Image (cartoon, rainbow, N blue to C red; front, side, top):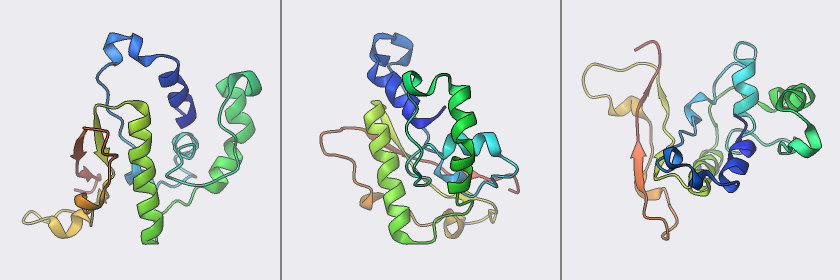
Length: 160
């Protein structure tokens, strides 16, 4: 689901549904290396999230764009062209993406924050700390007003 559509649903009253009271959102930052040529549909959805790429595609608005299908037909090419298809190369870009992921989860009213983590493609059967990547949990700032759990996982690739 495109990012802006999910935020609109939260604002429209997620809280009125008991089964949506407890929710987590995985920002899936580990998918930034997807090949847009083999994962077109997934990339179009992911590219609407601000932490993956910057583009000039407007947020989805049913009043302006009609159906989601019409919106995707109109803007999917621009979203695909904006997709980098590789992990962030600069520390500043990584930090901006992580901050954006956290702010988005706070905006959604998640009960915990899933911290972005790298995709592990190969794990030594011993100590795997070297391939997990650098994620300084103390550097991840969650607004002080939010008393949320910080959850970090290890996303294992298919070649494990």
